[in-house]
Amino acid sequence: MSVDLRAAAVDYLAGRRARGFRLVGHDRLIASFLDGIDARGATTITVADALSFAQTPLGAQRSTWAARLRPVRGFAAHVHALDPAAAELVPAGLIVAKVTRRVPYLYSDEQVAQLMARCQSLPQPTLAASMGVLIGLCAAAGLRSGEALALDIEDLSLDEALLTATGKYDRQRLVPLHRSTVEALRAYLHLRAARSTPTGALLLGATGGRLNKNTAHKLFRAIVDDCALTARPGCIGPPRLHDLRHRFAVNTLIDAHRQDADVDARVAALATYLGHREAANTYWYLTASAELMAVVSERVADYQERSRP
Image 1 (tube, rainbow, N blue to C red):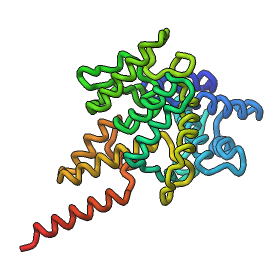
Image 2 (cartoon, helix red, strand yellow):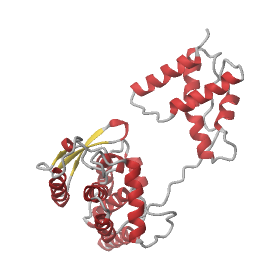
Image 3 (cartoon, rainbow, N blue to C red):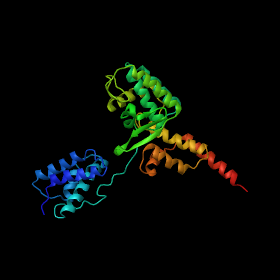
Image 4 (cartoon, one colour):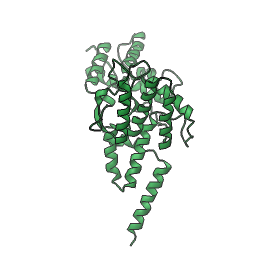
């Protein structure tokens, strides 16, 4: 049986996406891999081909090599299922890359207020207001910045204090809002209504269209620089917009301890709130902080005191 590798790639990617996988960049990587095979006049996929492709460019980080190998490995398995002679199975673990996560910057309440206030110094009023709402939603509702930027007006239900967020893999979830967040959004919508705009996007850029992700992150970095936030131990690089999501998760856990609540149950609820498919993914956000450690220590001490005969 002869397999048309290009056609097989189209079928493979379409089938995976139909099952809910986004596969960002996989088209380009698999096409580039097949270009290399064609250039050598080969018609089958070998483990050596996959490794050679993955380890280009030389000197790149192992995580980059692993990311390049991942789509090729899946595609090779698909082709192997069609015809074992057309592709060798690429074993797992050929390129071991340790996942290292950057230590998040845990903002204080005062720092969040400072960032939002500094937004008002932006020259365009609508953009200034949009950036303030973006920071507030990430901090108060634990949204990903991309989720906040993708919100449309109809995603808000302020009378019910809810918003509909569209997360990874286009999964939607209802996010309850604190009354202070609702009032801030009402004020923003009043300001926004004063500007006639053809878009239904919630957060607007300087020209009246949806606030662009790259623009938002660039402005946030400038606002952080202006605020000259205090450095935190272990943090490499400037504070990020995404770190506000970490702050939300950590504060949720702190509140659970202070309320003497079931922490595991609270984490399970938090996983749903943050849009995680598995609670295990939520633990990445629960970074140790001095405040969290102090609350945990107090709770342990109280438990030990109550347990004494």
